[in-house]
Length: 403
Length: 106
Ligand SMILES: Cc1cc2nc3c(=O)[nH]c(=O)nc-3n(C[C@H](O)[C@H](O)[C@H](O)COP(=O)(O)OP(=O)(O)OC[C@H]3O[C@@H](n4cnc5c(N)ncnc54)[C@H](O)[C@@H]3O)c2cc1C
Ligand code: FES
Image (cartoon, rainbow over all chains, first blue to last red; front, side, top):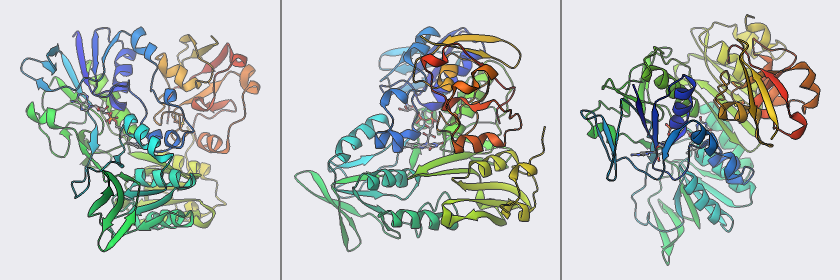
């Protein structure tokens, strides 16, 4: 095998390049990405990079020199238009790239609003470095920010903006923020936290459109309310970029369908990251995840298997979110729990909510409690005494069998 | 440029150049030194960039923050010289530092 082509220049693509070279692949690697940048970290976009604490040069996953030294051909600002699995080629503009193995790591794009006024200037989405640079330019002068969608990204932006002195309103269609991703307990905790810091959260409030002056947004319309806003950030989820795969005839269903080796329905094509719908044996289901650890793990798995190895993907999903001075680390799927155990006092802003199923730890939400997070990571699927978990006098270390 | 010597669990040595200000994690991953996963990209959220700092260098490092300390505490391979490599920025004072890599990241 001599040619590997990677479509997408994001987190999964970046890791795949590194893993391929690390595993000794000496053939040609073409990395083809639509964005103008080499692979970079997205999480800081709504955290330290938005606030200005982190500079752009620190976002790159690896420096430019890495790709030169390792002989990786990078084609940036190059959207792939077509994959031909029969010919084993990928087309960008007029150029064709042939592959022996192909990795699709196209991620997702923000779901857009198509409401009256949604093309006014001042309305932003947040997925790319370019997006945040535009937002930052506006944020410097903005007085009223309205965030449509109370998910993690929206709430991270809210925490940065309100800290900078901007008035922040958050509109959430559902009855609680973070409804899709966490338990009512955690939603309540974050609702209260943001309210205390001065963020105005409006639940059961649907954005119905925008009003503006001279092409610029001035108000967000919801029911019989109008909320003043000179800056709007919409964070209502992503749509996986699967059109290329679909047109090429690959099986897709809410993501590109892959097996536990990250292989698609075509033997020569693999996929990794936010664009995949993959099985997870540990959780006994298929899922599509939007997280960096998943993108990296799948990229490593795909790289090994593209080179003829036999690596199975099975890790417990986890995620983190930074809001104000609170670090939240989450692991597992709390929806599957039949019991919850609280360790610590939410009032102190340092606590962990463990979730159990049939006595075994299956998930945790840990706020400023990295130790609790690490316990859950190591004891996932292991039975523990709920009394010990809840008891702050019990050192969690004693629950982890030493190796 | 200051250099770092990473020693894999199997004894393989990698001597690589680093840029001041870059973390040891960044320097390792940019040079394809195996044994560091760095799943969170350096946000002190994952603990998959665990390293063992050679004893003679430990005192030259700024102490671990509380978060780093708690993340390390439950690592089964924890030693007194354990650190998270994303939390150690490179500097001239660390030129020649020797870093041992654990067999596994958790
Ligand atoms: C603001 C923000 C904050 C986040 N915070 C966290 C966090 O705290 N923790 C966490 O775990 N995750 C977080 N995430 C999610 C995380 O960034 C994603 O899960 C991760 O980036 C997925 O990696 P990926 O490679 O699958 O996709 P991406 O990183 O999105 O990369 C896909 C790339 O493919 C390119 N592409 C698409 N179509 C084509 C084409 N036809 N041709 C060429 N290139 C194409 C895209 O332009 C893009 O650059 C955050 C995301 C955002 C936007
Ligand atoms: S890279 Fe995640 S903690 Fe260091």
